[in-house]
Amino acid sequence: MSDSPSHTTPIIVRTLRESNCADCALNPVCLPPAVEDIHLDKLDNIIERNRPLQRGNHLFHERQAFEAVYAVRSGAIKAYTTLPGGEEQVTGFYLPGEIVGLDAINNRQHASSAVALETTAVCTIPFGDLEQLSMEIPGLQHHLFKLMSQEIQSDQQLMVLLSKRTAEERIASLLLSLSARHKRRRLSDANFRLPMSRSDIGNYLGLAVETVSRIFTRFQQMGVLGVVGKEITILNRPQLCLLAEPASELNQASGT
Image (cartoon, rainbow, N blue to C red; front, side):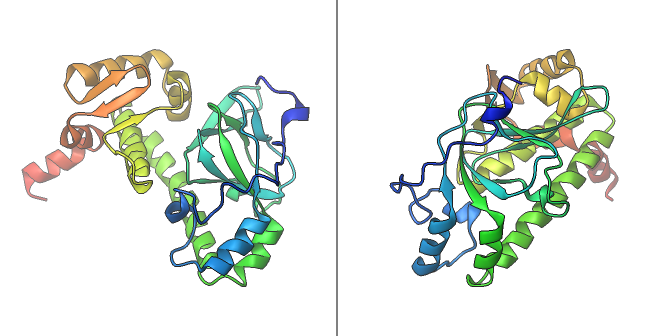
């Protein structure tokens, strides 16, 4: 990766108060509903808003001591582990409004590394302070449990994704997942940008980069997708769903 160990921690800028939880567009995604202003102020006081990470810089490294979780404000983060042979294995992608680092709570060290895929801003939330605050803010602890549950579900979905028989099913499923995540942020679920490279997608899905490129081209030829560089337009969602779950078409045909 392009950064050195001295750049693993974002530089803290505590004085920038023009951005806060109350005004943040991602408030409905990051926070539990109906948080009172007084509690938002307390949350603001523990959150560290950092200078943006540049592409290729790390948020944290694998086996680094766990101190905080991170909310992505803009940009995108790739999580990966390093295999015994030194190869990189991509384990996930994090978009604005999503929390990075929850998998470190148990062992108190990060199970993966996290690197910026593009210029990325995050909110650093010291976990000790967050634990304390969760006892004061109604719904915050439940919200943390919900986020951890989503993390477990994502791991399970990845296992299902990798067990799919065809490369088309894997890529179609990933695109539908990204579409749903954009919709949760109240953005277009039909038009969005892929922050990750074709190589990263292939690594994540267990496919060769040539296969990924070939399938994107095939989806375009079928009229399912519009693709311009990293910009994606879903043109035929029902067909994309059938490509992700072809068995559902057979079940409908058989009446099961």
